[in-house]
Length: 303
Image (cartoon, rainbow, N blue to C red; front, side):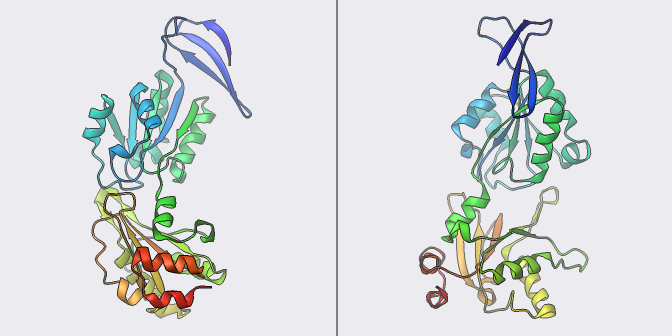
């Protein structure tokens, strides 16, 4: 870091990251008491409630001048914005999809130019492409960015299922079937992963504004309908699946079973995630039996 001394707005320094050089203005006098401008910090909140944020994330929030939160790409069932505000002793501004996707995050960028700005994201900040795009846009504007990672459903769901992480193939989202339209992409992705013996993690659609969250049961019904049309044994009634509800919460549910049985299982409140296992290692089979109440004959499927 090079310091160029005071300006009429503060102290000008430069920081180089890769191929980018950032000009950072900090307010105040050269006495160690100043705040950074032109900075945006992405903070992952974790999976369940406001207490899931890391200690580093908490400290960043406390020192931020402005705090924004996005709550439409995921669901933290126990999150209370009011309690979070009490924890960090400052206002949390919840932004809509329109602010991020239609307006390109300009509201957040304007705040970052005036002081240290924190952007809260449920789970891990860089999992959703919307947030990656926001970070790219910030860098193009000369705004320094940092990331404080948080627990993500990607690792939590896979871990709690007992299936080995390196054996997962491409992930896919199962969307709501709107006006009778059934999307085939999830079926096709599961099929291709199956051919390679890989597990498939299926994210289930969320419409936060409408408070609609696709369940394991609804997703299985959609895939069964596709199976009737395609008849490729991808989502046949006797195929093994794993349903996970509220991973990261005090009372998660993990249930493995055949589709014909799991489709009627009560997983409770959202969020839900669905896994189609590929070829099973014997330890994975044992884990599904011990941790997810899978049928004991699953051991016969293991290799």
